[in-house]
Length: 83
Image 1 (cartoon, rainbow, N blue to C red):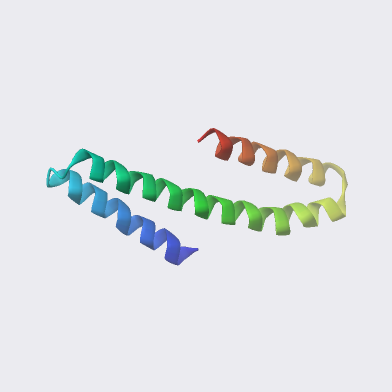
Image 2 (spheres, rainbow, N blue to C red):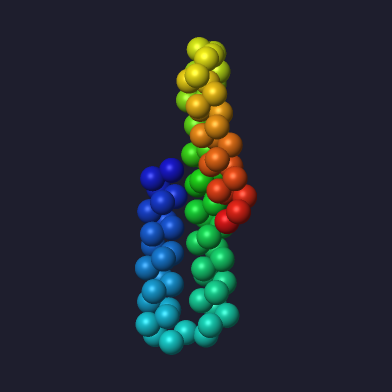
């Protein structure tokens, strides 16, 4: 995941450089779309990890902790779907 985030960071620096150099707007927008897609991919990896570890463990324990983790995961999914 860190490697992906480093790559995204490089993409963002490249976008800033493109804007500074007055590159064609559509080319910049294309790069922004690619960076957004890469960020969503990382977000999905994090969500999957959270569901498979934190939520699964909390569900096994049950009770208020399980309810809290499920609510937390639902809120995270809602945020991802909106973006």
